[in-house]
Length: 204
Image (cartoon, rainbow, N blue to C red):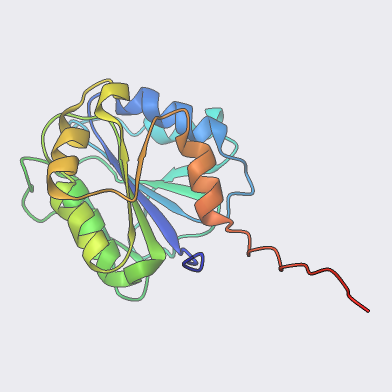
């Protein structure tokens, strides 16, 4: 049996149906969740920055829009601002970019996933939730190529199956999950318990 891997962060991508999915997920995670979560939700370029405040109100976790140059902290959720790519640098800090859209999207899930994979390698879990299109599929493959974990919402469980179905064509996930089961899965991955020591009977 492989040893539980220590994770440094969770990255997550979603689109259509994503607000409801994020509310369900973040409300079910405890304030003690020991990892940062970095999230790309496809937004209109002129979207108001109210979503982070709403999710922060609903969730035990701290939820905020990501700021350029900040170092992600445990138990905090970082949302990509509208019209900015959310990236992780090699030193683990966040950077924001106005580079051209990828798959017609800025922020792009692929950009977050690929930069986070380069920063954290096997110490990263990537999650694809409900959404239209294929954004995130290449990024999830990049996470797996670096030894990280790939998690995909079951397309039949998703409000919009496009992104999860596309991800399944590009990668064989380590975990195929429902939204309801995802909080427990993330907790088990973030807080892996070491195997119990083997006990033996004492013989005289």
